[in-house]
Length: 290
Image (cartoon, rainbow, N blue to C red):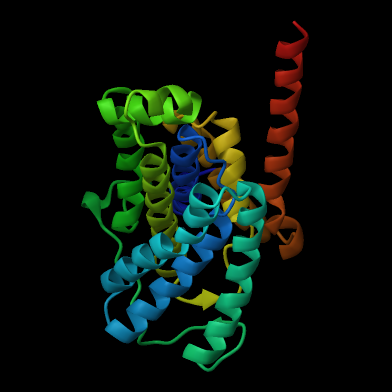
């Protein structure tokens, strides 16, 4: 039941969650609670498939996904930073809009309903890495997500930009008094988060599978929000939470092979999410009471 194939599957499953969770952590550090990860990832997945199909290249699809995710995140940036809208309300609206928008576009662009798949659609190639168990057989985006964790950690805690960013999130008035543009930093992290969600969508639609299905993110963006909370918006903490959820999803797929119904096995990541939230809230209550 537990073998190298399970962990290899978990690496592919955790990558979209990790990219999106890093986006959420980056926004959190700037004082923006971003729950629009689900919708932005879904738009990125659709754009990646459309770019790959029309351009004949999976890497062109990745580029289109990044651009689409960045552009779509402008809704949150303009609405929250420029006009002072509530980030939670905007995030919910962005997620709902993404579901309707991609459902409309799959009919308009591809002329189909539900799922688009084509033999000519280019998916991301897997790298061999000399046949190393677990580590081989993944797309370049999987390895890029691993590098993003220490990269973001260094940027946040070993670079002046990260110090100013954390100042914007923790003490925006003090940061502004020192000449730091709160608006510019928050715009920057929201757009960077959109790009990361675009990568998450591209990996989901072109790396894990090679197709687009309506609402194919299936709650992964919400799981990424939980990963940000469990990891306290720290890059290494977010990675640990993403690994947990990736293992739960991979284990759910494995349970289908022993005869459990798909509906039950698909619920595995969300059961783990609920348990993790319960344990986290219990720990927080203990600390508050003490």
